Amino acid sequence: MSQRISFIVTGKVQGVGFRMFTKSRANELGLTGFVENAAHGGVEGEAQGPSDKIQTLIDALQQGPRGSRVDKLEQNDRDLHEGERSFVVRH
Image (cartoon, rainbow, N blue to C red; front, top):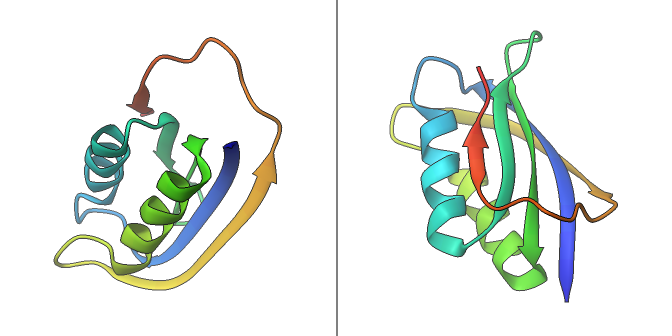
């Protein structure tokens, strides 16, 4: 079953490669969506794909890349988007 979520990650997540880490994991899992830095100092985005792959991404985001520190990860369900073909980093 496909699922789409939005996520917000706070902590030491900017300047440590968190967006590229997220993109890499999402691509490995075959997910679509995006990730971007948030004005509040966190990282946010959306991901879509099979529910088990979404959970694997969330587990990875809770750990983060080396040098990061995840204080909080929030996620919410979203409506599915048709036509997306990739997972991108927004600047």
